[in-house]
Amino acid sequence: MKKMKGLMQAGIVIVYILLVWTIVIPLIATWFLYRYLFNKRCDKTEGVLTAADYPNLECSAFKVKSGKEDLACFEYRDREKCENKAVVLVSHGIGCSHGNYLNRINYFAEQGYIVLGFDMTGCGDSTGSGIKGLPQAHVDLDKVLTYIENSPEYGKLPLLVYGHSWSGFGVAAVLNYGHKPVAVVSASGFNKERSIIRFQAVRMAGKIGVLSMPWFAVIERLIYGKRAAYTAVSGINAYGGPVLLAHSKDDPTVPYDCSVTAAEGIENKNVKKLLYEDRGHTLSRSVEAENTVKKDVAGKPKRKMRKDESYFKYEVDVHYHYSAREVVFDTDLAFMDKVGDFYKSALKGEL
Image 1 (cartoon, rainbow, N blue to C red):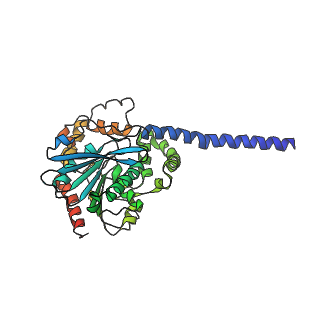
Image 2 (spheres, rainbow, N blue to C red; image 1 turned 60 degrees about the vertical axis):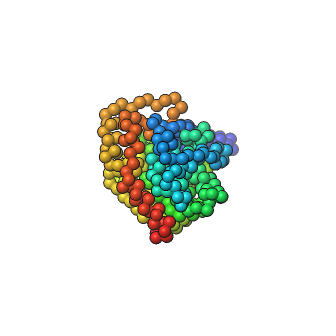
Image 3 (cartoon, rainbow, N blue to C red; image 1 turned 90 degrees about the vertical axis):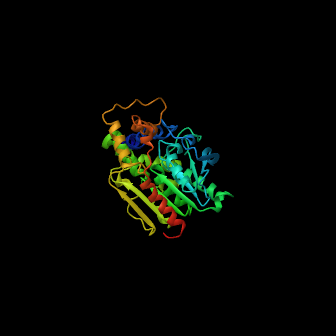
């Protein structure tokens, strides 16, 4: 009997040791990595655009609540060309604020639209100690879209949505919440946040980074509940309306294999795709400007990360650190006109 009791006690100890080494320690280690990546703010990047760069833009600010945080939102109108014909919501990528997209905001304003931009939780002028996680893109977008839909002014106008990179995922995934804008454009977006986390984990830590994936999933489930499982494809299918997916096969930030453009399972018959070979991640920047940025940074040393600087904000800054501002924010009208034509067709009911 004593021998059996001793064996049982030894077995329990072994089980607990195995649990600690195979579950508890990896989960704690991944939690610290998650906080390193997402528990820091993405304050404004170097050389970020402001309304002062576009004299014809009229800007007014307002706030939208997302959980405990205040999202800094901005309305832009071209004082000469605004026709109040529709609202375009422009949503930014990770490591940025809406100011990085003012060239695209200005383009839509010049087309006569009221244009809204906002800073995600923990970004730019919004509150928050960090960006929390990748699903925060569609969590914040849900709050902003709900505000727009219920607004006495904006709610009576057709709504068009544009998102890039992190928000390329966000503007599609938020359609899981039941929003029905007139049309959606997802540029350089990924389909599943776990696929892009896997890519970044391997990029940062080599193949061993894959071992953290199950724990990332657990942490996101704890933070976001069922919303952690929302994908761009499931949102697009639930929506059923016009969606334009744009991606370049040489995208170094969101690899084509991770993109919503390449994803399987799209059943929405109103999806159109723009596929490029050589436009990099931004898409809205000309190929010439994209090549200039690559040449500017080639062989140059990266500056060191600053204390408490977000990894994602650092990645944006160091990529453009050596390039002229007008090159970084170059706007390719050929690409933007394709987006503009898509919106015009959607508004006419031609899609």
